[in-house]
Image (cartoon, rainbow, N blue to C red; front, side, top):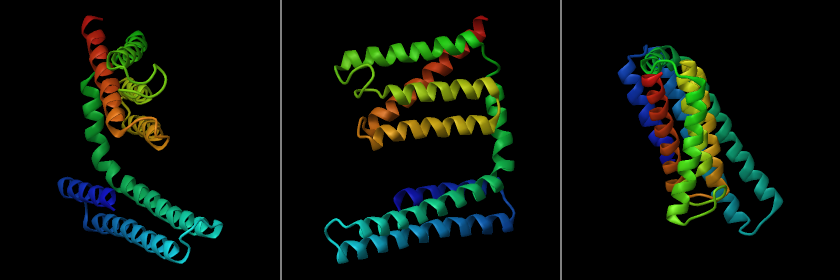
Length: 209
């Protein structure tokens, strides 16, 4: 619920800043309320199932999974609604930001990703945590994923492709948390290293090309 409320506040602030139409505001508000209500129903179902069946039972698992699936479907619907309404307001600004960085070279992209990998290995070695391919500070998967997403964004200058690339990077990073291989701190550090190093290297290649 905390995550949903944070997302709802961010969406409402964006709506106020972008000055959407009353109808668009109403549709967004209904989508947000639907997600919050679905999460509350999910919590209520989980509580009832735990009360009735404290131990493990296949039917209890089915009930909880179905309730969680309903929240996921509602959230996906809200995301689609948000994109359809906000895209025409946000995408032009995002495209202008990407265009500010100019075009980048193919060689710069490859070198940037290699440098990110090398830095991740050096930091893991210096901190004595994990192995080059597993665990430790920072998350190598997050670093490489966000490095690629940054390179794709700067190479394409396409807001939608950029956002989809960033979404994939977030999903890769989230998988490391779900598998309990990395902590949130390790993933965030990896994402920052991947994005910042790639951006700096590509800008250096642009300057000296």
